[in-house]
Image 1 (tube, helix red, strand yellow):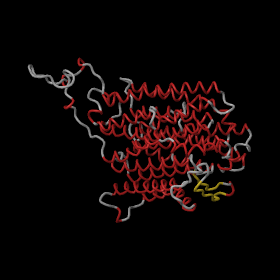
Image 2 (cartoon, helix red, strand yellow):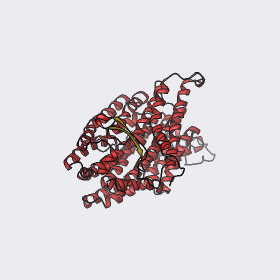
Image 3 (spheres, one colour):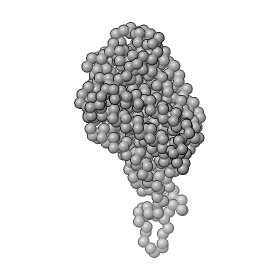
Image 4 (cartoon, one colour):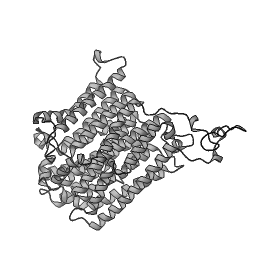
Amino acid sequence: MTVIDISASVMQFLLAFVVVAPLLGAVAALLPAPPGLKGKNPDQAVLRHGVTVTGAVLIATIVLAVGFDHDHPATMQATTDISWIPALDVRIHLGIDGISLPLLLLTALLTFLCALYSYFKLPAGPSPKAFVALVLVLESGTLATFAVLDLLLFFLAFEMVLIPMYFLIARWGSGQRQSAAWKFILYTLLGSVVMLLGILLIGLKSGTFDMVALATDNGRGLTTSVQVIAVLAIGLGLAVKTPMWPLHSWLPDAHTAAPTVGSVLLAGVLLKMGTYGFVRILLPIAPDGMRTFAPYLAAFAVVGIVYGSLACLALARTGAKGDLKRLIAYSSVGHMGFVLLGIATMTPTGVNGALFANIAHGLITGLLFFLVGAIKDRYGTADLDTLAGATGAALYGRAPRLGALLAFAAIASLGLPGLAGFWGEMLTLFGAYSPAEGLSRPAFRTFMAIGAFGTLLTAAYMLIVVRRVCMGEHTPHSRLSPDDRAPQAADGPQPSGAAGVRPAATTPQLADIQTYEAAAWTPLAALTVLAGLWPAVLLGLTDPAVQKLLAGGKS
């Protein structure tokens, strides 16, 4: 069933347009603006260009989704297959199925919202032209990663995003931005070198780099030892990008230093490239190798879940001087641990849960980084102790809509039933209860129990953050300074509120959610609710494709 019947040639054009248009838009952003489009402010003109290009890509992606045959989501659609380098049998092979389509939509949506947000709130840094061009190159590389069906093209697209993200952190970031940017690119480049060796090993041993042909063969053309080596090499590169504990240490520094839109794209889109590679490449192409490493992958995943949550609890406690952006970054380590656990089960239930958790994390954590960026802009700091102090944020009283949205994003992140964060984690744990044949059931049930304990820790640190930032600290009266105490008349009535404390009416107000912020954040909040209440929209796309992938190309 298709919502609108669109011809195959138009679908091919749309997918090619979605991948190439941001790249062309990046080149155009660096060129002088035509006389009629300069406007009064050249900087605003190039930011308008960014909104226009990302908006056009989002519309094309939505049309692609509307024309997608939802009755056959396991079939590659909108395919283009052109020989590029005959000597190496490298082909420009594009296509989408139920696994890649949601990730394309997520990428196009988040990039558009970041461009829209930047139009009104451009981070401090060099030329806006360079900023817009880098965001568009980043979008093109990410979309290409989810659309290409050739291993070498996948590697090129996978690497294409590194340089723009490096410059976004190094030139538009804050704090220790240079060291954070270097750490990001060194970690990911080292992982990518090892990953390239694994890709070349698969291509040389099987005689093709075509991902569809390799998935259909389901590893029958590769010996077990080749599969084990390939999974080790490729998995290492993918694990760095995911990021999997203990290869995660670049992530908190990168998020802390990155500008708001950089953090949104890094968490919402770039981390998904690693887990997508596990599902698209390793599960179908090297199943025997994955079966060998699955228990270890699951073990690292659950350690990451608990470690990330404990790190967040440490940052959230009073007096820790924890950075709120850093805390959200560590929460990503835990959430991506659930995605890896689902993949490690090698079952349809677990892999579907992993793919659902991928999308949910992109929506919820993207919204959280937007909100934390807005709080930092208003206060000049993301230090949790400062935000929670007696004269700190207290968002419920000073910016109630901002406080309410932060509380909503936090409870969505902790996996409240009825919101998007719940289904991915639940399906992942169900998958771990009954892993694929050949995997140790007692071991995976142990991993399931540890993962379930991690959800309790997640709830603990998220609720602490909400209490401290939205409500402020409960400071004893004896510790209030004279300036913080309400004036009292000798015989007059006491002020309203707690005795001796300044009335809430004198609390200085902050700018609440602005119109442009509401425009950028509302889609993420709405989709979080929609995915939580109607998970079949996403699972109906992914499940047939996952079933076919795990069955070796057989529907």
